[in-house]
Amino acid sequence: MKTYDIAVLKGDGIGPEIIDAALRVLAAVEKRSGQFHLNFQFHEAGASYYRRTGTNLSQETFAACQQADAIFKGPMGLPEVRNPDGTEAGILGGVLRKGLDLYANIRPIRLFPEVNSALAGKRAGDIDYVIVRENTEGAYFSRGQGEVTPEGVRDIISITRAGTERIVRYAFELARKHSGAPQDQVKRVTCIDKSNVLRGFVLFRQIFLEIGEQYPDIEKDCLYADAAAQALVLWPERFTAIVCENFLGDIFSDLGAATAGGLGFCGAANIGDAHAMFETTHGSAPTLAGKNKANPLSAILAAAMMLEHLGETAAKERIVEAVETVCSEKKVWIDSNGCPVEGTSAVAEAVCNAIEEA
Ligand code: IPM
Ligand code: MN
Image (cartoon, rainbow, N blue to C red; front, side):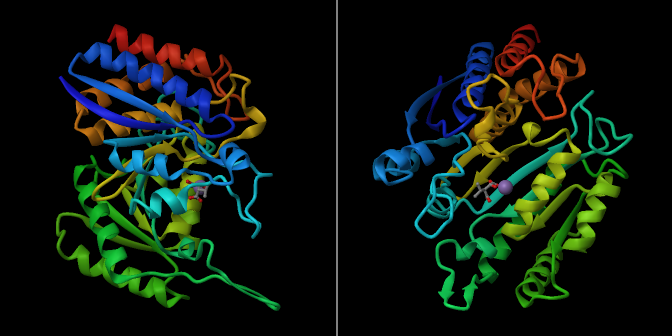
């Protein structure tokens, strides 16, 4: 039996309850499959940990994350826990994404059956694309390094050839595995940038077109970011994979989530050549914490992505199919705040039951 070591960081706010929900689902799928074992090691990190210790991630935990086969992480950060420079102290983007060189942030945007989209008339099958967000440079390269003068602050957007080549390639490879855009079943990669204004984005688009030549089977498409914001709302069915710089990917993944039932349906994978981390796309929502209100499907879908990365594709499919089942049977009903009416634990239980009964 294959055993995988998973470093679990439950995080802040709603983190612990949605991660616990996902761990229940992982236990159910492990039992159902009988082919593998997940060995969890729990570590504290994030804003509350920073408040207590003055660091958001200890060196031991970082080393444990390096050793693990995968990292499973809840949302981190609390609005009142700040670094001396005013930025949030709890978030681990700099330490884990950059520290482990997890350069590809993969964010599927998919409307599940019977889930209400913010867009009128959209149904399951109409929205099914993946955002491939560059995760180590772009505007967030300046994290902690902005040049502060009495007049203001200068943050730099850094776009490198090597950084762009690897993310663009990742997007083309991923598009090959996708079933194609809902509109026409065409496998296409859309490059979203602002190359009409900034030089870094000129390079980004140029590299996209260069690498794209090596993928004659994939359609190439380019949009300026402002036009893309409109297109993602008006014509989401034309997208298969989107590749973009870090900051743009951050924004478009929330926009896309809004069209697919909200951030509670969006898991994310952060992948590098040596390490991988799985988390939700949303934050720690401290006002919902401890109330059994948060939608755990983002964490459950992130867990499914982790199984796929570990090579347990059948187990991943079991989870995704169970989520489809509970959604189509309306066992998950989302209120106007994005919360499941029956509560966090009831959603986890419904997914576990669907896995056991499948
Ligand atoms: C995300 C989050 C993070 C980001 C925050 C918490 C730093 O919004 O994963 O999208 O900006 O990348
Ligand atoms: Mn974000």
